[in-house]
Length: 124
Image (cartoon, rainbow, N blue to C red; front, side):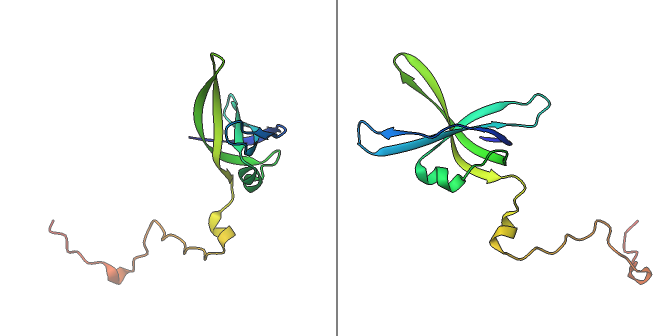
C-alpha cells in the first residue's frame, strides 16, 4: 500500500533491548498528511537504525510511503502497526539522480507528410 503527502510531525525515536534475543532495537514514528479535499493523516513507523538513517525523513517533505499493516495482541487488546518499508521523495526524477541519459522526445502526434508522399492504395 502507498500513501502520498507531507510530513507534518516527527516523533522522538524509541528504543530498547529485545527480551528474547537481547538485541537492541530502535523505531521512530512520523505523521504524514495527504492533499485530498478532506485531508487524512497517517502515523507510520520506521523500524531499525539503518532504515531511519537511509530514509532520512525531514519535516515538511513531500513523500510517497510504501507500507505494510499488521495487528498484534497485548494483554487482551489489539494494536495496529503501519510499518514503512520504502520512502520516495515526491517530484524526484530517478533518471536525473543516476546520471543516465535523457531519453529522446516522443514523436509528435501528427506526422509530417509531403505532397509527394501521398499514395492512394486503398481498395475503396
